[in-house]
Amino acid sequence: MSGVKLKKIIKKYDQLQVIHGVDLEVAPGEFCVFVGPSGCGKSTLLRMIAGLEDTTGGEMFIGERNVTQMDPAERGISMVFQTYALYPHMTVEENMGFGLKMNKVDKAEIKEKVAQASTILQLDDYLKRKPKALSGGQRQRVAIGRAIVRGPEVFLFDEPLSNLDAELRVDMRVEIARLHNELGATMIYVTHDQVEAMTLADKIVVLRDGKIEQVGSPLDLYDDPDNKFVAGFIGSPSMNFLDGVVVDGKVKVGALSSIAIETAVALPPEGEKVLVGVRPQALSLNAASDEHQMVNNVDISEELGGVAYVYLSAPNGERIVVEAKGKSSVVKGQKVAVDFDADLLMFFDTKTEQRIR
Image 1 (cartoon, rainbow, N blue to C red):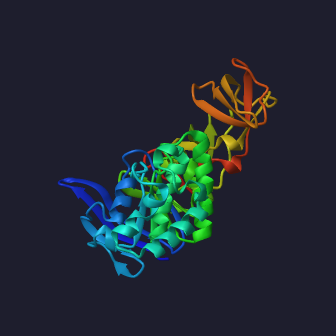
Image 2 (image 1 turned 135 degrees about the vertical axis):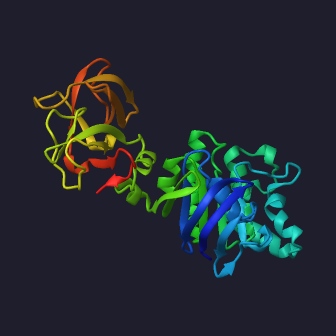
Image 3 (image 1 turned 180 degrees about the vertical axis):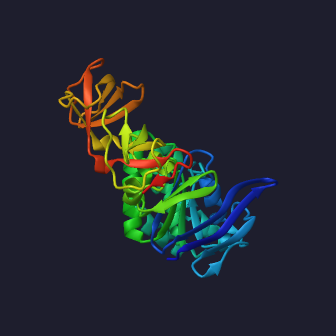
């Protein structure tokens, strides 16, 4: 079990730079998730760790070994791809052991390692089947089993669940989390799905345009984002961002209240605009009992059973999403107000989008 350390990692394609001096340390046994929008560089960075992409600049370590210029086979990694990449003419058992067979490992040892992996992944009943006789989730488990039998120092996952339907994605998330707990191995996982990131990770790395925006535990990023991008990307539904202005050392948020709100953060000068962030979970609906509350129009209510998401239009035209526990009693076109806790508001600079603390 080894950790991974990246020092000033750069990737260029001719004159186009896509990874910009990334510094990162993944501790031994840690489950680290790279998350970000399409094109942010997360898969490229993972492929660089795997050795499938050359490193233009910087250094990369797995354990104590500098692997920057090593071939993929020498790095001690196993990778699970978005596509299963199974050999259709081989059985599950043969697919899982194929890498070891190519390395001329003894047949008895291959059989033992495949048996261990199949037990972990609950594939014992499928070892003699070929991939066409398996479901999508079973095929992905075979691909993971193929990685396990190699006994790598680090597991790499490149969006392994994106080809599965919603129910299977949930099931496989549980499987991968259980696998990590059982093996205690270092895992680096790429996804664009922030729900996957929040539920699987010990550490999340939020990437944008080939740079790290913030690194931390799921709840650290949720509760204490450094900037608007991280605040909006982490959390579902996304954080509400509303226009505010500094008035007498307070913030007036026109979509929420007619009076200015006190805050302990270091606000910009009088009259300056700020961006106010508040999560849907930090808001609640009422019947506008306070004369200072803004009366909003209900656009739609998404009823999901245990929770409802109510989409509102504020008097100033801004949109607000409120999470309501259980079933909401509101209907389209109804007029409602929003209660909020001022301590849960976050403030961002309108120019830099950095958090005002």
